[in-house]
Image 1 (cartoon, rainbow, N blue to C red):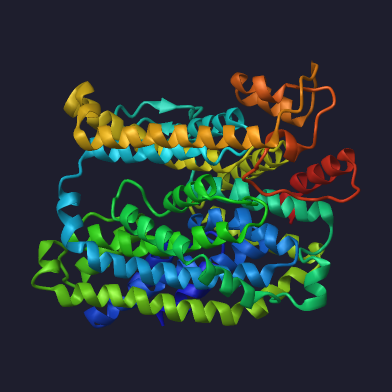
Image 2 (cartoon, rainbow, N blue to C red; image 1 turned 90 degrees about the vertical axis):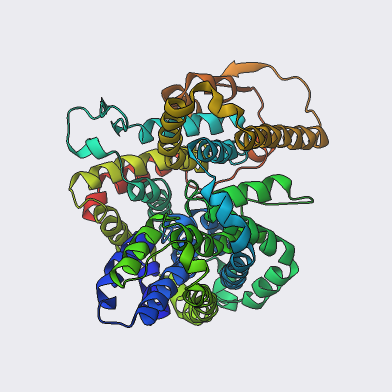
Length: 548
């Protein structure tokens, strides 16, 4: 029952684990305590599997945890490899959730003392490590990535300051006092731009190859891809489980960390951001493994490892189950019950999603005139349900327009989203650490190690990019002149520092791929449409968007 209900809820964009558990919690009041725990955990575990379907097929993440899957999954669908993408995603989700739960069983005796010794300075160090991942998600232009991250920081700072309650950029409105919702940002920068491009193209999503061979053609190849890259699955799942056990990180951030590390340190030819199956495998095995990791602090020390786990903790208390060290000694049987519930839910959920995908994937053949209004309506419902205020629609439209401009200007949106998530955590733990320890917070052994790893990671990213640039070879000196286009205009509006790479371009510039290297974001081929037609159709869609 939990797998079935969780699958249905996760296919709807915007529902996610938090709202899903909130909806299901009242149904457990009359259940036996063991049945209630299994029901809730099964639904939560499978939500990271079925949300792959809208993320891959439409480029619309079912939950924020599947946003990293969009980068490689949706381009695979556009070139006719929907079956391969879904097959790799489902099998890696099953393996990721299973491996994550098994790793949890192995590390329980060792990680609980580590959790008890973790305080705000250590959590701040982890958040800074996560923020450093912006460097790996910036694509070919580091300056653009930092500019996009600056946009995310500014959006995250809207609202009341957490320590002094001072209002920041609220413009004297109550709506902005609590800040901008995560779903507004997630659906705005990723969902609306893809739907707008679909409206501009005026055709179905599927490529001609998919029409000839069937939408699920290549599913077996996707399964074999997962088995071929089993080391990637094991590494992503294990790392995600360990990170998921730390409340500071959270399941929304972990897939991005794993994805960025995969793209940075993968050897050999790669096509990340444009349809590399390894990107799908890494992100999907990661987001499923975080459920098992987040369960550990929830059960062992009573500290929720994620927002959905906070509701699950409430369900435990409602049924008389007290979290704490006793769950690892006197009530170890219930802890193992929860772990094996996650394992079985991932296996059943993966099989169920695979069986459903064949029929659901047929929507890629539907005309854009029918599909665009339907997806737009679902996106609206998913965004409004966060605070249920009409202002959500306005901000969704504004963020959607921002996301579309960033996509057209080739500014990676992943750094913006990652910075938006991590900024409140960094701010909170920084204030606590400074107030308690002063400047000595950075000299604690664990913090010093994490800061050193952060510096080494940034150096590694820089060295990898320098090596790739040297291999491509220098194209010789070029005379530079100012060019006014959407890229330079957006750079001028966002960050003056980005002008160094966005405003000055060669007189005879190479193609975008040659000039900037790898680009970790989706791209849309509009065929023979002129820039004027693209702009007019985008303006038409966004202007008439409330009527869709």
